[in-house]
Amino acid sequence: MIAALLMVAQIAPAPAEPKPVATTIAAIRANPKKFDGQVVRLHGYVNSCIMSGCSIQERRVKAAGGPGESLSIAPDPKFDAVVAPLTPTYVEFDARLDARCLVDVCVGRTPVLNVVRLRGVVSAEPPEIED
Image 1 (cartoon, rainbow, N blue to C red):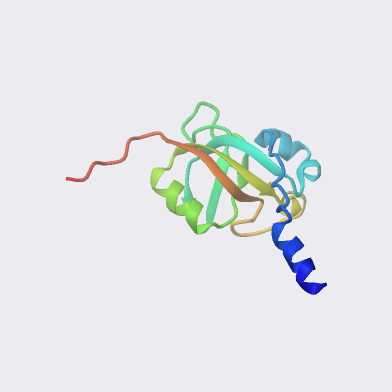
Image 2: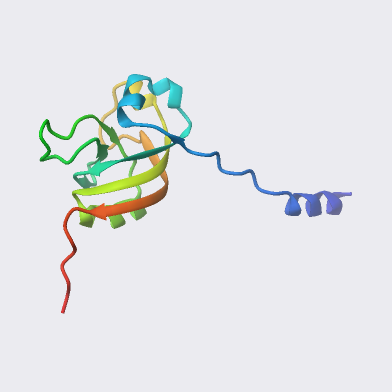
């Protein structure tokens, strides 16, 4: 009996990752509870990404009108290693939203967006070519 249950458990398909909800930074800021716990698809600029702060913003920091609204990206060594050397850069990613720090006050690098999948990175400047 137990062996049969273990076999069924091994062949049962893993639950599919939910399809991301395409949205905007402004829409999340306007109604964070609506997106809480969901995987969202966002695009925008990461103008700076350091240990103490990393966020996605609507525009480049030097854009007319400034960078616009932003959302904090949770610490993630893989994401930071890819994106930080390319900043400022345009990105598209899927992330699970945690609205706690949008509703309440949090300090430090808040875990609002936990990146699930980095879909694209476009550096504003080409990387230096080493000889």
